[in-house]
Length: 533
Image (tube, rainbow, N blue to C red; front, side, top):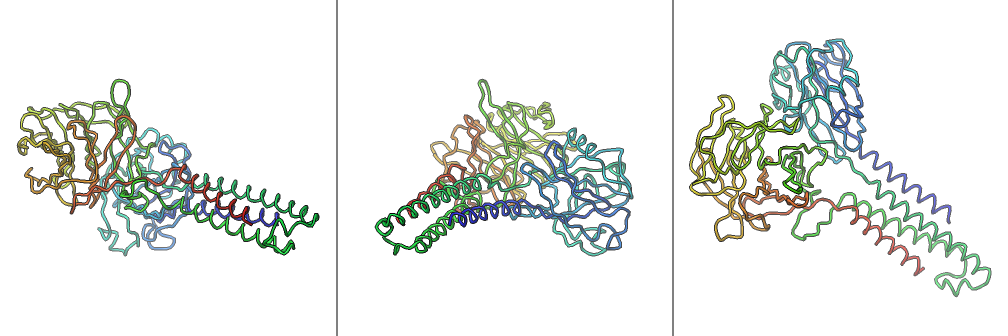
């Protein structure tokens, strides 16, 4: 019986390890006009690993051209690894396209929002050349300045679909233009903005191993005790559920073992895939849309806030993605098409260098006083700025001409956060009316007119306007409210119900302490079962 329990324990553990390894795989389907190499590694280029490339020359194998039929690769990244596509062109049209099925079941597509790029001049491998060496690429990545891809078009598009579809869903993407241009002399490195989401059930596996080890010890002790009791002739009095025969005793223990393993397996699976929010009205981040966005991150120090900016999901920030910005920055907006990042403090506008964490003050509106909202209108290609000095104003900045203009007076409406939604072609702002405990979500049109308002309920947000610890963030059809705590690096993320105004708190998946409690409870059930038998 002991040997059987040990065998079953080992089988469960190995199955758990095998499952975790299988869930860590990425299936990548990629093509390029004309050439690419596929890699994975850390954001700074360390641990860079080559996966594969497409055909040399312009002829496909199979296919008339090397970009018509994509290649499929299986990748085994580790925690913290990003995906990299290194692409170059032989002249003429240029692009790459890819779909990546991730370990969490979602698919990452090539586009201009989930990838960033850097151009390396002067070393184009050519039509028949090899991919750049790992050492060269690692140096390129370590020194890179990353920007959003300049062009991204969903299929069907352009010359490529005239030869037949590649079958991929991702956009055709390139650094600057689909036409031959400056990047012909080198190659472009594309990097996924977020690292690959990889499950980490190792703690659960260790706990399960320990639990089964305790079970085996219990069985070993019980079996030895049975031999002693059986020799003394008192087995039936000690184990009244048996007839005094060992086979019946083993059957009972087998049932206990089966019951224990089943409970532990179910609870372990729940711990990996099912969240347990502490707030009954809250929603688990694991059961909600897979949203990726960028937001500010505050940590309070002795004299001022330590501010950074980086990637978030509904589960919170990706701490490895956070890049420092000057401590005086209160709002940030990105011009993705130009790779520009803007920020404001209370009275000035800055152009931010995310590589160095510094800001350069720009010439702002002449009458700017107490700025409090910043966003980028991608439809009209303009930066929007709100203020609450005097009666408050809504300003517009045109990047091409470098000029500011006043859109309209805000008529003493104090806006805490400003956000443009391309999905609605609308500008949203948060405000607190005097005497109200709930914030109001204002919707502005492109001329700065308030066209509707919605009272937000279900959350206590900061009523101190000018704190800038509350952000509105638009992600596709969703509008998020992110509440920052300036004392602890903690974030409350809310989904907004645009029909009712209800704010739904999103709770991250359970911490390891919850998993430990679950497994502890399972062990308690196990020992209770053994004691009763």
